[in-house]
Length: 331
Length: 293
Ligand SMILES: Cc1ncc(C[n+]2csc(CCOP(=O)(O)OP(=O)(O)O)c2C)c(N)n1
Ligand SMILES: [Mg+2]
Image 1 (spheres, each protein chain N blue to C red):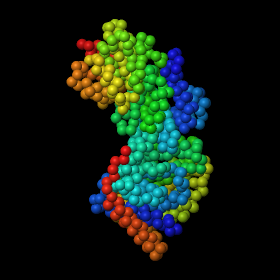
Image 2: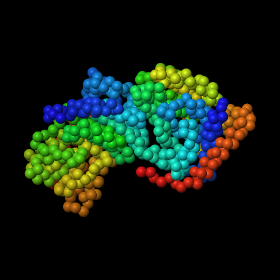
Image 3: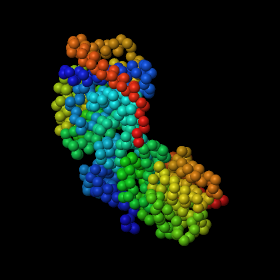
Image 4: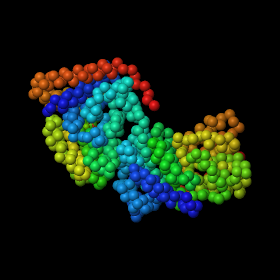
C-alpha cells in the first residue's frame, strides 16, 4: 500500500488481487462491468481483467445473493456488491435464512464463502433510501459475520479473512471512505491487535482521558474529534476500531477500557437494539465493579436521513458530535 | 412400467403413509408435508438425473430424497431425531443436505441458489444441470422471477420442475395464480414443457429430449407437471371436500395400477409396505440423535 492512495483505490486493487489469486472467486453486482465499474467505481477494470469471474447482473438483489450462495454451495466463492447498503434489505432472506443458516442447519458444517459488500452511510446528500447504515439488522444472526471497512485495515488481508472463514459475511463500507486517504491523520499512531486497530497520539504521552470505540466508517470523524479534543481541550485518548463488528472480540476493547473511566461507543445509525448498544452492554457488564464510569453511547438521531445537506448533518454523527459526547463524559 | 419404478413409487407411498400414521399415534412432532399423489415426478426424473446434477427440493421433498438415495431409514431418523439422522436431526423434514441434494423451507428461495450452482456447472462441468422443484403456489415469490431472468439471460442449465397440484396450502390455484406458467416461461424466453404426471414411462419420453437440450447449453427449461395432492397440506389441514379428494384418489396411480397390474402390483405393494414397516420398527427403536460437532 502506498501512502497517497485512497481507500477506494486500495479496495479496487484488493479485489483484483483476490480475483487473480483465486480463479474460483466470483464478483457479482449491478452495473459493475467496465467501463462503468460500479456506482462508486470500486470494480473499475475488473471485468476487463477477469471476464469470466466478474459478472454484471440485473437489478435483483435477492437473486444475485442467491446466485452467490449457489456458487458457494458448488465449491466456488463469491463477493456481491450491493449498489447501496439500503438495498441489502431485499436480500435479507438469502443472507439470513439461506447463507447463515446453511452453515449449520444441515447437521454438518457447510462452508458458505460469500461476502456481501454494502456501500453504507450518508454525508453525501443521497437521501433517505440511499444513505442508511443497516448494520444492526444483521447483528446477532447465528452463522453470519458483520465487518466494516476502515482506512486502517488492509483490504486484502480483510477480504482473505472473510472469504477464508467459511461463514457468510457482510462488509459495510462507508461511502465517504472511498475518497478518504489511507492514513487518517499524521498526528496519530496506528497499531493493530489482531483485527482491532488502535489509534492514539504517541506511546510516550498518556492517552487515558477517554476511549472511543467506533466502526471503520467513523475513523475519519473520530480522528478529527481526537485532534480537536487534544488541541482545544488537552484531552488525550484512544480510538479502537474493530474490523469485525460481530461476533465481537471484546478483549482488546476491555484492555483499553480498564485504563480510563470514560468510554464512548460511537455508531452512525439510530438508537434501538443497535451495534453500539450491544458493545456498550458487554463492556459495561465486564467493567461492573471497577472504578470505571458508565459506558456512553453516541449514535445518529432517531429519524430518516434527510437529503438537504444541513438537515442530513444534524441526523448523522459528525466529529463535533463525538467531541461533545467525550466532553459530556468529563462533566 | 418396470418393477424398479413401481417399487420406488410404492416405497415413497408407504413411507409417506407411515409418517401420517406416526403423527396420528403421537410419535412424530413438528410438521411434515407428504407427497402422496406426486410420487411419479421424482420417479420419472430418477434415471434422467446424474449423481453430479444438483437437486433442490422443497417442503414436499421426501419423494425427491428417496428417489435420489433410496434411504428411508436415514430420512425417517432425520424426521424423528434419531440416531442415523442424515442431517443430525437439525434439519428435519424440510432441511436436508446430502452431497448435491439440498432442501430448504422458504418458498422460492432455492431458485436463485440453483441458478448459482447452474452457473458453476456451465463454467466447470458442462453437461450437468441443476434441478429445482417448486409448487404452483411458489410462483407468487419474486425470487422465482429474478432467477428465471438470470438463468435465461445467461443460458444456464437449470431445470425448474413445477409440481402443479392445483393447490397451495389451502388456496386453490385459481385464487392465487393469474395467467399461466407456460406464458411466464415464454416471457423469459425459457423452454416450457407440459407433462401429465401419471405414467413414468410416458413422462420420460416427453422429458428426454428437452433435458438433453438443457444439458447442451440450450438454457433453462420449465416443466409443468400436472399432478395431484392426495393428502393434507401438512398433517390434518385440508379444507377440500371429501368428494373432491375422492375424485383425486380415483385418478391416482395407486388406484389405477391396483386395478390393472394384478398380482405383480399386489406383491410389490406388500413388499414395500413390509420394507417400510421394518424401517419404522428399526428407527423408532433407536436412541435420540446426539448433537454432532
Ligand atoms: C416464503 C414462504 N412463505 C410461506 C410459506 C408457508 N408455506 C409452506 S408450503 C406453502 C404452500 C406452497 O404451495 P405450492 O408451491 O403450490 O407447493 P405445494 O405445497 O402445493 O407442494 C406455504 C404457503 C413458506 N414455507 N415460505
Ligand atoms: Mg401446489
